[in-house]
Image (spheres, rainbow, N blue to C red):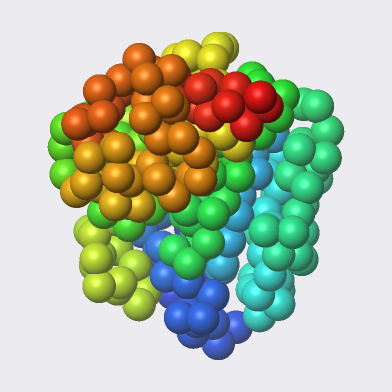
Length: 283
């Protein structure tokens, strides 16, 4: 038995016949030393509600509770995992609430109930980016959560923390770093999972900025960034044509050069494009 008197995770998986489903983007994390490290990366948990997406058999859930989380709200859509999670809830009375729901359709801010909240999750790979972008576009800002500590495929993590001019710099870097301070905490070897994924994973920690790097409307920023990186090898005088506006006028209003390429624009310059876009749409 483990320190919380719960059986080892491999026994839990065997007992409940929990084979990870590729269709749900599942890869179960069984190393309790590693899940403890992830929980500690999130910072102090004692005074926080922790929202976890895709707990599966509960490896990270157990670590969050063992590290002192005041309460964990685990959102799991795979009914096969609910019995295993119920055993954890019984071992930590009153501290684990399991929500049988699809995270993409769940109002997490309402679950947080205005209490200090951190989001910590080994995200299902097939919805990880969609969830992250949704959290980054939260209104009003600063958001209802204090931090995000999330696992992604390493390639995605590299894109989140990439700097202008690097090959990984793109939409995710702009959206993430505009509103948060994002850094990669550590990589996770594929062998730590059951079944092992084909790629290395990484833990990314994101702290919301009190104010974004520069003023911009989130939806306008998303549009200009998507257009610019939609044809990242082209100059912006070509790639921004998909916005359907007077492209030379848009670029001039933003104070940029038409020969620039998206991968070399700073986040502040993308914000200038978003403001110019909004102004031209409103005219």
